[in-house]
Length: 291
Ligand code: NAD
Image 1 (cartoon, rainbow, N blue to C red):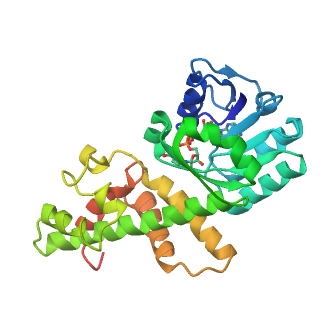
Image 2 (image 1 turned 90 degrees about the vertical axis):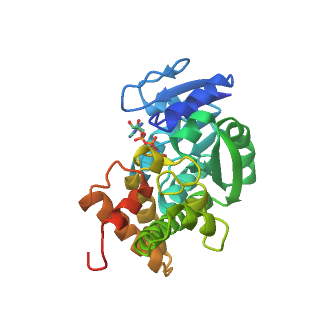
Image 3 (image 1 turned 45 degrees about the vertical axis):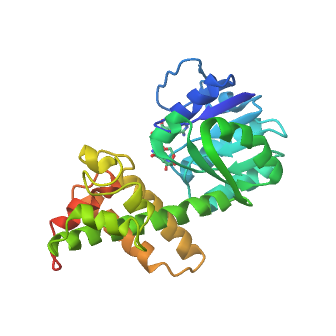
């Protein structure tokens, strides 16, 4: 396929590299200078999008996505696919998909889970929203860049799945970290805590696959002094998106709101910026109830 790829940062560059390695002709655009083997760079987003079978975007947020969409939709040929893999608010995803649909394009919102490691290894999970035809067009590309793609429903459903998943992740990571800190103060050995919880009803991905305690469980960022992994500030972004969405549909999400506030404080006031989101454990370790 002829593919335009816009937004070649930490995630976009390795995703584009995998498409190139699979034999696709990829033309890229980024506002920052980017060089990638086998990638033709265009001077503008419009140039990268014109004449392509599919355009993929991997951008920081919904406002930037809306700007880029306004530039590329008018130059794309009817029937082409517009696949946005950024994590953005549901409203922006739906607005962009509507504009693309009105121009005769097949629009898919397809945020990803799996991080930079998954982008490089081609093992991302895609959660997609859009029509059957749009999903069918995108599916072979998801197969190259990822290991699983779920068609979640109409436009916006991919973003909805992503922010709900990450709201659960933020909440369970905080719960796991505060329980470890409590266990420490109760004199419980961390390995014993892991052995019990990872095989009991408190188990979760945060405990079992990404244990926040160094030296316990499978290898995780905790074993590398909490170098990310999934940075706490990205968790703040996703938790804020979940709270924006909850407000827009009047959903009651008290634990999501508490997680958003705890991670915001962690990043802004408590030295959490640039640390993995599991570094909540040393944060709780140092505190007492009054802190
Ligand atoms: P990044 O900041 O490394 O990359 C974004 C790229 O977009 C940058 O290269 C930037 O120069 C470019 N850009 C900004 N404005 C642009 C414009 N107007 N036109 C063209 N390019 C523009 O971010 P990232 O880590 O690659 O994340 C990209 C998206 O993926 C975000 O929405 C993020 O939430 C999501 N995501 C990231 C991770 C992760 O672990 N990094 C995991 C899952 C999802």
